[in-house]
Image (cartoon, rainbow, N blue to C red; front, top):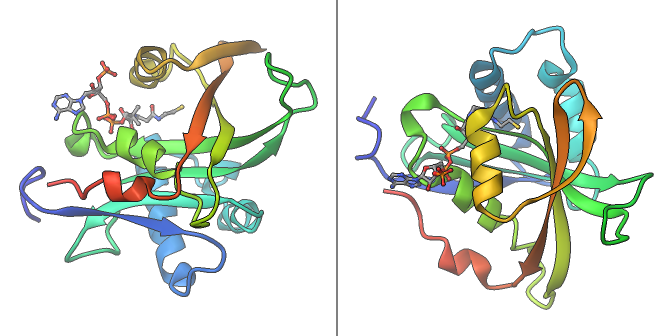
Length: 186
Ligand SMILES: CC(C)(COP(=O)(O)OP(=O)(O)OC[C@H]1O[C@@H](n2cnc3c(N)ncnc32)[C@H](O)[C@@H]1OP(=O)(O)O)[C@@H](O)C(=O)NCCC(=O)NCCS
């Protein structure tokens, strides 16, 4: 494997309509299981649940992989639409929710998560611009890097969910040409 940081990584998006979904979804799921050391019987490791969540309109997986080996992702996030029975503090009850996000340790602190979240600005519709809300749940004591990352980038604490878990939100401007401003990582 090429030394991390010297190979060219490219950003990819998977939706339920991606022609290579059957091949690539298990690869990203495998990456997630590695990053989170997942119990293979848990919901987080369930290919069926991944397929179900990805089938929702606007659901997408954004991931980074080397240009030459796109089937070997090194970083990913999984976002899907979520309805909040208790609206967010701004009164909004719908968000694009980042269900899972992770980066292999040797690729961290190179801006992968930042670029993947930025990539969510592009919804594939060249005529669409506007505002929407991102949400994520995290447990600061378990994922301190994620907590620091969110706090430094203006994510708002919405509410405590119990057991140290919190719901965070971010207002996001959606721009149709945003991906052009997110070059591949080198
Ligand atoms: C949390 C996590 C996803 C962050 O991913 P990442 O790709 O390392 O995040 P980024 O590179 O965008 O940012 C991380 C830090 O590196 C810094 N950074 C980015 N590019 C950098 C560079 N070229 N050189 C040095 N530092 C850099 C960022 O400023 C940021 O620092 P800050 O948070 O102190 O401001 C990753 O640490 C991870 O996978 N952790 C384990 C799983 C996890 O916690 N998932 C979330 C569960 S809710």
